[in-house]
Image 1: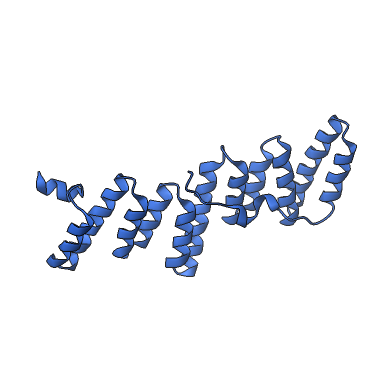
Image 2: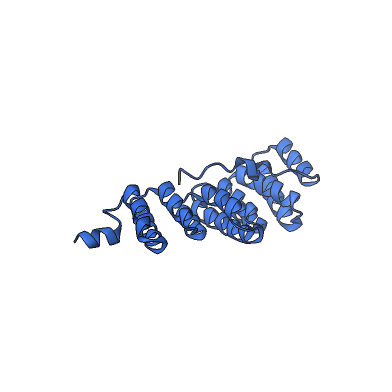
Length: 199
């Protein structure tokens, strides 16, 4: 029973893991991995990541963050610890997973993640798949800034039609003026993607 407890990590502690080094590098590494897995089960995410990193398991540490919904932490760690080309692929994947996770709860955040993951069209489609004016305006701005002409026209037409339905001619004119000039997608600014700790 005691052996099973150690194998499951439930009887281990940082001090015991450190003492395992007396049995050699392989024993210490094995116990670190067991203890790290136990910490994941206990939802002690940051502690688990530190132990995985201690034995060079960077990819496993990244997955621990991602599986916990802590995508911003995973992205920062990937940039710090992976080679640039590998980091680009991993980070893009994390943004896509983040976008998929929050799409129904926060379309703006999801759109930001789609853009940062290199999927601008997915971001625009997500925003346009809703009649809310805020989303349509973000879709229009994003489509213009990334030269998605067809999507810009579609978003503009929907906004103009909505404005005309309530006789808001000034808003309709403003929308047409916006669609005729370059714009910056402030609604999907990378700086507005905040910590994912709330996930």
